[in-house]
Length: 410
Image (cartoon, rainbow, N blue to C red; front, side):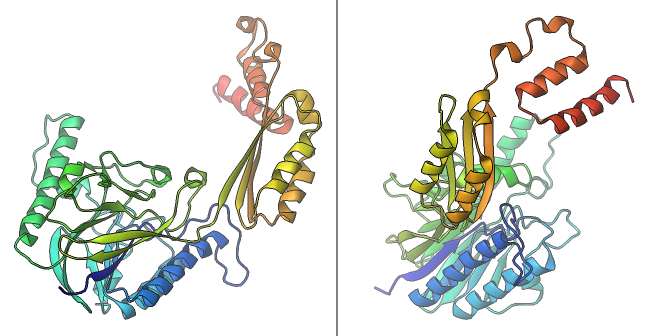
């Protein structure tokens, strides 16, 4: 038996995410963009060390569909380096799709320039790719745009749920067509796709989603004709067929780096696969993603709230972490709280970035809207509401002034 084909599967690099970062004086890039690029550099080192035969990128290179030339350059450097080691398949994700059909996608340049060893996947098709350890059949399923899937389909009179069902069926048929094409091949078979699979656990990617999703049924992918299914689009790493006998691994590699606090507890990294016909094995390889840490404390009955928070900070390893504090106060304990001392402690603990010191101040019942709101004017009601939300005086005056212009019809 020949050696298994060594494959690396990654996705959702989203170069261009800048939240919780500052400008790096050495490069002019956001320090958070540097985080995402470093994760790609770590992955390159792994590919080189482990003699990987083929690299599958399952879509979403950039944060936006119109990335800056600088971000395109930095991504291209790293894809070029990978392609010197092994063939690279670039799948088009929803963030890679151009805003309209007349424009090029953000990764189309690799095909235009015929970049050696880089295969751009823009259609539902099967390609046999030669590697150092033999050929592999790669079936590609780029992000399913509705306009593309529904070409030639008359949807007049159909409801939105009926259109969604039609799209799912068309997508399932396309994937089944590719499975039939590889069925007679004795070489390892891989399917890579960029879409949501029914039953998958979603995460923060919903906050940066572009386009309305078409979901795919897991039964469409859990097909023994495939040896491995490499997915992108959902940022949370997961194997959707972990407990299914006879089904291939259907795996979201997840993103390489955390985007926000919605991914605070998620593992980040890529997948290393040893691909063989009916005998595929794989493992998840964690990346050194930037830690995100939330510190919570209920200080409503605490006589020394500042000291309590400082002790909580000392107990945690916050070095190079993006940190946020979510604190509950009463009006009395909030008045005793020294926020500057807390921020100094976070700096001394070498926190990378303080995302927020959130203060939820409990208001007495009589302050919530007053005892008889029926007799209040709209301006007075708004003023009371903003007080219950602990909006600062200056901001409250701004909002009330703007609201009064609306009330007057200005």
